[in-house]
Length: 250
Image (cartoon, rainbow, N blue to C red; front, top):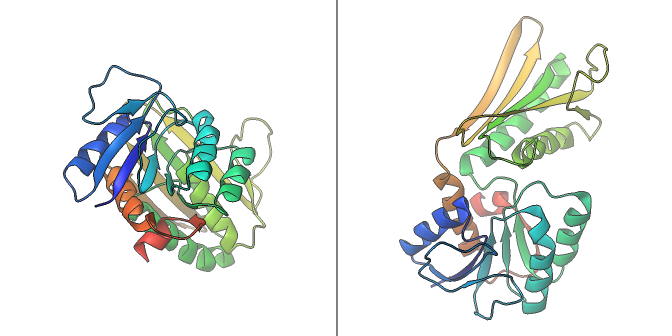
């Protein structure tokens, strides 16, 4: 049985994951969260440093400013980490890469099987359609409580597309800053925030007299939680390295 620590256990995703683990072959042995007020069936610590419970893996769904202390903790204790927090800056990304040389880290902007398939399909579509002069735009929609924009998933999609294009394309986030025609070698990325939208990502390929759209819609947060738990089971016992959801579903 895989023993899991939930970092960010009192957040929405932390609670969903805790519920899924409670009904699986895994066990949630502890939580880490500075905010209390929720009755969890496992001990909860205000910080990673305060946690003294042994586990096989940590799942993180927290905020960007909580990631650095967590990386220090997993390196010190040699615990595999499923890192699901988005909106990480360049310094944190660098720290994640460095930590992965010492402990196994699975880092993914989106834990959904469907989203990772969408990324794969986008890469295939891009390799065909850009040669036919199709423009590429990404639109992402999320609930009004989401802090980061654009979403980590939208950026992951854009990066995967750009990798297919030998990283020759730039990203355009705001067309109001400068009045000019669209550059052929750019990917537009647009964020919508409102209501209770769990997550929706669309990739639009606009060509001469035709449009192709790839789209994924999340109807509940449970799809991300299920993916995170599957990732935790995959990562436990793995050697140091940087993994992603593609490794899980391969």
